[in-house]
Length: 205
Image 1 (tube, rainbow, N blue to C red):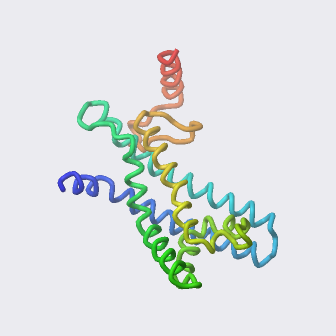
Image 2: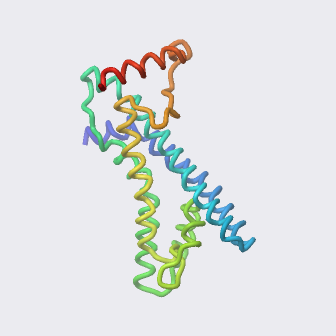
Image 3: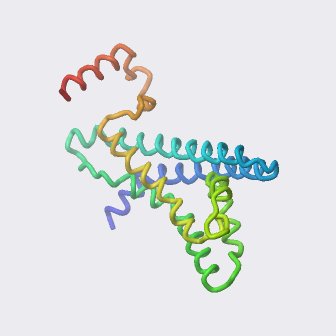
């Protein structure tokens, strides 16, 4: 119980932020998908769908990576054990609403022919995937018509958060796009960053 309390005390903000990012990107992706569908332009639907998904995953990566960098100092000082699946756990908590919708959608689909309100909610809160799910068909139906799809689309976010946390905890930057949040006085200069990278390369040889 104490570990659960500690987990939520330390990472509840990050889970909520991931959920809020999803909500914002779902509205963005849903709007782009509906505009593309209305225009009957499959090419536009493809590119906007891919763009919305990438944008969403990048935002999640940023949150999980900063979690890792925050824990890094405590891990290096021996005050905290390195737990490579911490990003996974935080992502799972953030995905609880998605799992609830997916379970409800599954039940509706198995006991009746319709998807009910859960299907509408599922498409809306996963609006960033709507373009691709509309464009891709399976057995003659769009992917968003299948309940199992709403379980599968949680996997990219879980995987990204897992990798991002590990990268942050190890002090590694993916494509050198991420920079830790530090007070202005503590932020390294470009020269210092370059020297650190060169030192890390020498150590890795």
